[in-house]
Image (cartoon, rainbow, N blue to C red; front, side):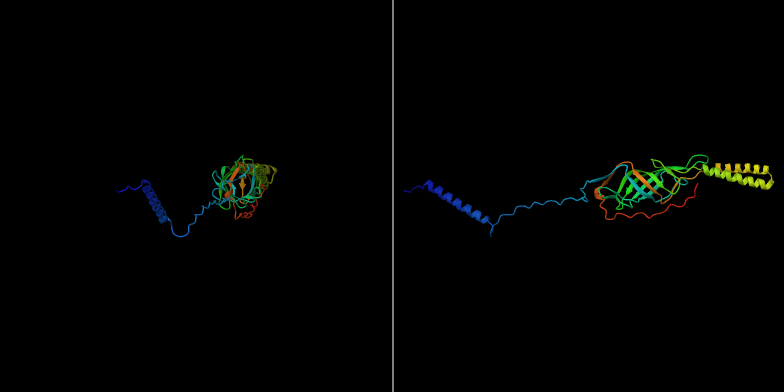
Length: 266
């Protein structure tokens, strides 16, 4: 008589076979050679940005009212000037902030004439007005500005107001001199021609009339700023500069000194 296998024995045999198969499978997946754990990932830190980096937003503010010394590069005269004409200047003295040069010597400024008026034949002085609107630093960095001249040394008798208007000298003294000269010359010619006091008086009257005619046909002195004139310009609003653009390797050179030409007295 055959006996049935014990259920507990069968279950034990199946469990043992499963353990053997599982161990063999794990051993087959194990790579050969000694095993080490992988190193943890190394965190990297990006380098800090500098003032010259693209991410820099530092601003340098040059306050309104700052005076900048400049030299005129092209002469201006009411004889030929007209509104819209360009005006070119160069800085002659550096502007600093916190012991740092922010506008070097040799920086360029560009402006334009706003209006220009020639002197009249009977009355009225020559005058023109100018404004500065562009600043170009030696490295090419260009910014907009709003500035006007406040004083000028032109070698003449021009005056300048707080809005940048240049006014030429009056011509009354010159006109009086012209009439006096022609009167004296006419009197002399009349006296020589007639050899009488009456002739001198007639000649003087004719000379005075000629002098007056000359005055009425001629204009007064032109308003001028010759090339090489020195000026102070004043910022009328705050000037904002990008700090990353003023890391100068070349601080520029002072413009050559050009003396304004000698001008005859009026």
